[in-house]
Length: 187
Image 1 (cartoon, rainbow, N blue to C red):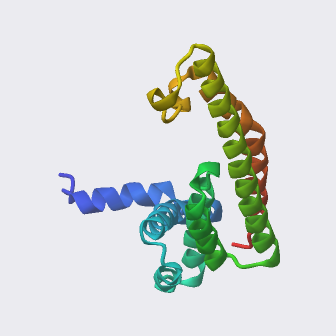
Image 2 (image 1 turned 180 degrees about the vertical axis):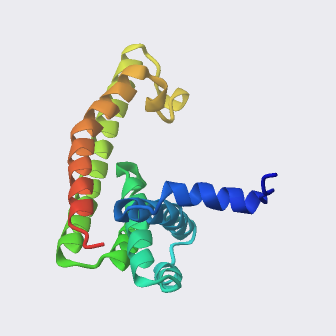
């Protein structure tokens, strides 16, 4: 009569039949394991803006894991860069620089900051122009004085469309800078 095997022995036999993982498969598994850790570190940083936190947490891992986790955190921070963030952009930049402080990264972070400032100025000018046009239209309708203290430019779809059109070339430049930032990071 045949020998009865435990579930562990059966699983072990099946695992032995599968063979060893290739180096590429092991690297992929390691990346898959480290990616959520890095993303979580970035999200936590974004909630408290403590760049020392990033380094302290990264130091808990061996050098290979640290590199993969740092790369994942950096990617998350770069993803979160947005033209409309303004002051938060400085904090994101500080986090990026704490992960990868090279001349190229510093230069690109500076370019992103300049682009953000340029966008905010252009957006403010466009908003003023839209508000002026709105006041002019209301004036032509003989609505003025205390009846209009503020023109709500968000209420009109065509005005929102103008703001989106204004943002498009800035967003394209930002996307290019984000790719440049990721390409220039040593991690």
